[in-house]
Length: 240
Image (cartoon, rainbow, N blue to C red):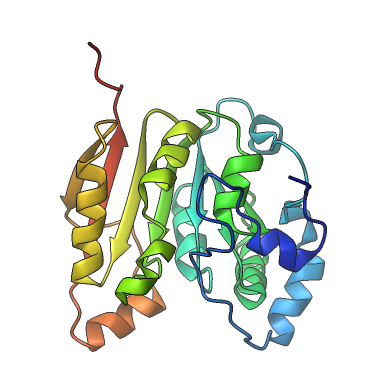
């Protein structure tokens, strides 16, 4: 398959074998970018990674031995910036498809003087497939991915058996995937997918005190939806 060249193509490109062609795990949004965010995309360009590159050099970017966490979808970047500030020894690869959010996070990077975050505007599944080396990530974080509540849209959910295989192949042994959701049915879906895979172990956990409350999460709580955190760790496949 030829590599995409335009920004839109890079955002939408998910290699065959992960999800069916044309299936996206996100909804395209046409949100106006603020002057602050637009300015940050120029002034903080050094923190932007090119999604058209080949394999990412994680050690060259963050330093040999530095653990790197992939964050899939970060909204306005506030929670990402807060976690990166409190954990400067960990590298953060933050990926989102929405330009205004990318600009917002870059602005926060500049305002906080962060050096441990890199940002990419792309579909995270495409990046995982094409650019992230095998067994190189310490963890993956996915906070409030779209639950796609209608049955006909379940094929668009981020948590799918094929995606579990892809993420596990990119995590170090014992690496973790931390998710949070405000939809009970999606929580049950997540638990069922992971329970059916013998290469993962884990489930619902208490909310970690270091995970900031996102703007979306505040709205969910205001609307009466319960928040569930789930953490899964990779385990060796069964033998025999």
